[in-house]
Length: 367
Image 1 (tube, rainbow, N blue to C red):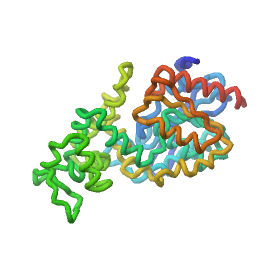
Image 2 (spheres, rainbow, N blue to C red):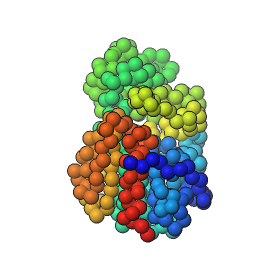
Image 3 (cartoon, one colour):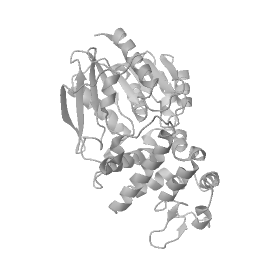
Image 4 (cartoon, helix red, strand yellow):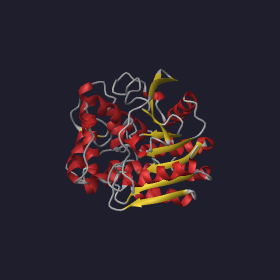
């Protein structure tokens, strides 16, 4: 197995206006004459990472990274409450990728996605299969409703203390878990005609009992993603910042289950977590504007595109089942399961498998 390639700096970078008042930051590393490889970061809203440059042989690849709308060095930044999020959707990102491809004069490229970036990579490949040389996916997601619910509800019994804090943090918005801003009492704000439930009944519920109550109360009305979506768009900056911190504290629970894992230093940056949490909840509240399960149903569009799915056996953020289901409908996609690994692409075993995949494609696709 291969180690990560040495650290490398971009040989070119810039900002591309993509419409709607948005501009995306991009950079290129490696060999200007090499195989174009597009890196799609996770989150959504995490921004590109210098470590991802190291998954590719810089002598063989022209490595292209960009910050998706609203995050990183792209503008306007989602941490600004005045940033218009209505023009930040999956469809907009797919268009941005095409703008970037044309701007950089790329005909075909290998597409690499991590976590949310897998969803984006699959959506792009299914729409623009004629532009994709190969796919490498790590920590596979398709952003179905079941995947979102797993992250922000169904995983709760594994982290009862953190879940209690997470739902307590949502007391400023949403049905059941909302504490009325002016009335000062807990209850439903979703105008349910038959809702006589008072929030006091919920404040003392166990995590499992609360999940049952949320489910019985309506599919979306008690959804903490929706509650945090509202909080992160509150007019009060203090409310927004607290919600961003609470959101990231919850996400940290599943990441830090691995004793070797660490949190990105960016998570101590208020501007970063504000943008990231706002973008994530914006996308997940709207189910990423994807018909539920569509990426699996339309996987036939990937026929003829070779790919590798690198998946940690114990990935809590993106459970193995999604990668396995994709492997069943994508004959040209090979599933590589890394024992004892979680979600992090830089973890032992994961990074080696990713590098082995990009090296293999480098030999096959040498231009």
